Length: 383
Ligand SMILES: Cc1cc2nc3c(=O)[nH]c(=O)nc-3n(C[C@H](O)[C@H](O)[C@H](O)COP(=O)(O)OP(=O)(O)OC[C@H]3O[C@@H](n4cnc5c(N)ncnc54)[C@H](O)[C@@H]3O)c2cc1C
Image (tube, rainbow, N blue to C red; front, side, top):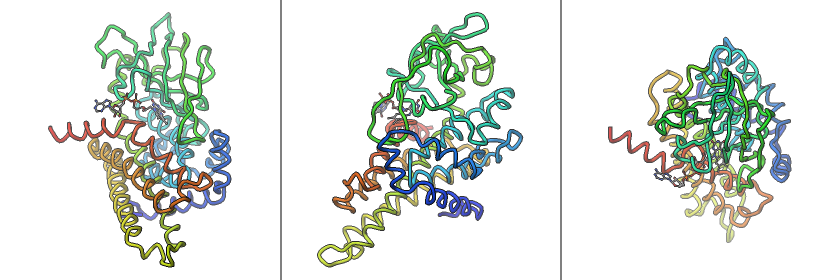
């Protein structure tokens, strides 16, 4: 806990912890991970907590924009079950935050009340086989035909695309424009003719799905341009507007995963002896724990400081980039060290620590790799 968290956030933390204790014991998590099925029924139970409206203005049924509250939820869910946090992110960030910030009035009226209740989930489909770090190389085309657009091509590595109700996707609407221009964001209803998925096997986040998405002449009306037809060919500026929040949401995942790893390693070290000596008296163990706790504290401070800046509508691009970079690296460091502290138990697939270790690895890839983020931080320093 840190000073950025006001008393009502402590209550929120307790509420999430109680929910996880009651609904997500290790055997439940293991069963979902083994089946590789997203825990949508547990998401449905989460609706009663009233936590889906933290990126949505009250006028649309939300709780008012409280980025740090949403980050608290993501952190607490990630601490125990990172894949459950991604489902929450689908509603609150990919849906709520994007539509609240970029949608037309009609799109806000249509989607935000549903998102605020947790009744809708969205996937965020940017990556393509040849457009990963450089999202603007997108080749998925959306070309006008009458008062519709015809979308053709594919996306890849899209989390929960097959389970989401809608996809927000980046398309090329002017193939003749320079690479960073001529891009537009579209809202695509799942189930529309011509849309299909292929599941991608993966190492972590097993109870989330990861998909290739194929668009075979998918037709949507012009009103499905995110922000309305006047935002046609303004996809790049929309991406930039939402980048800070995207960095924050993944930073919150990283802080949660790192905290989960520290919790497990500390509990193990407190319970076990080696050569008759308590592990907590072994300096090689306690130094690891000290480093983990210090890095984690720093990552959490950068995260909530950034959230606070964004909530106060102050510039926070550098802070958001640092938060995502540092929290993802901290998650990897803490889970790796926790694996070592737990010895052979770290490698035991019946134990939680190896799951957090596997889940931590993608956090420095998805939503901007650590290398790209360091490029961005350095570019900011140059100016
Ligand atoms: C589990 C998982 C879930 C994902 N979920 C989603 C999702 O929901 N939606 C979505 O749109 N995408 C998603 N992604 C895709 C993710 O965002 C991309 O993998 C990421 O942006 C990197 O793109 P890439 O894999 O094509 O790597 P590349 O861009 O090909 O990069 C390969 C390597 O080169 C480095 N590199 C590239 N360019 C530079 C540069 N200019 N300077 C220095 N180093 C560079 C990278 O850091 C990386 O190490 C997901 C990925 C995974 C693994």
